Length: 417
Image (cartoon, rainbow, N blue to C red; front, side):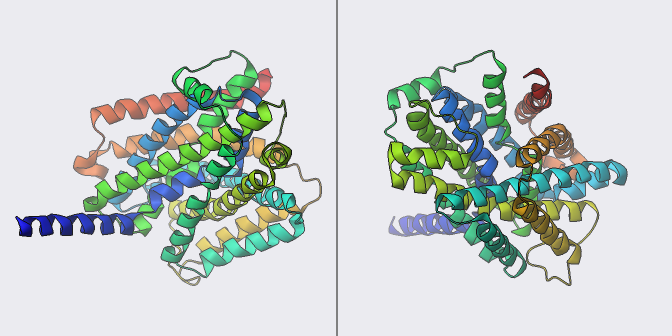
């Protein structure tokens, strides 16, 4: 009996150790969802509609979980990145047009992250001409001079730091009864503004570049099918963390800004407006959360872009490779940072237009990427016995249908408002 207990205890602690070794790709990919664009979307939603849009986080969680699980499984089974598989199965010409579009969209998205760095630091009185170059140099050194293990640990710390939004929200003294009602009784309004916010909240949960990063990070970590159950736990935790942070950002703005009729256009406005309503600490925590999220995403976004572009065209890629071993990867990563950070430093740069067009390109390419992914994960020549089950396919194709609809609405909405 005693030996059995000791054996069970040993297995338990071994499983815990394995989980912490495998921990990373799911949580990091999920957390990057809450970037500057995401925080802005959630902040505006809370300020404009209060708690009424909290219900959207439930389908957003399901979509994120389904897509990331398929990504991880495909990466583990094939040992290849999504870009590699698309090129091998769709041809170079189609791959070229898809990835040129993704590259342009991701430069726009990375520019938005640097705007988040600039805006958050302005709350603390620091000029963008100081914060943006320092932020850019930091993320460049992290990737170019570091290695995957060091970078991943820092990314996990960044992910945990986003929980400061929980404190910021609680300091706003939210109405929990109203919050519960908003989640279990979805509220719908048939007007362009409300529909745009619904699309924005669900759409910001999943982006084309995320699929490539998730699969590449699973490969970079060297995970095998025996690690699948731990990887799945990692993904579930990452998706939950994403939704929890989004929930508290909406709550923070709903319980303060909405109740006082304050309208905002970006996340920086929310941080500044919180000061007289919830105190200096709540305002500074909100701004600090925006800064951490922006730095985090300004690292991951161009990194993911460099990964999948190099994979698509057969170049070496990876944080653990030296510059001479993967020059295209590091030149592309560096170039995206310089261009994106440089745009922010241009006086009166059209940041709103850049954000809009990057979202439009994302919206146009997202269904193509997701359909390609589901076709690949159902190909027995590629996946063997690890193809999707019927139930997973039903959820997967339903997700694609919803994403196509939302992407179409995202593109068409500006013409009807």
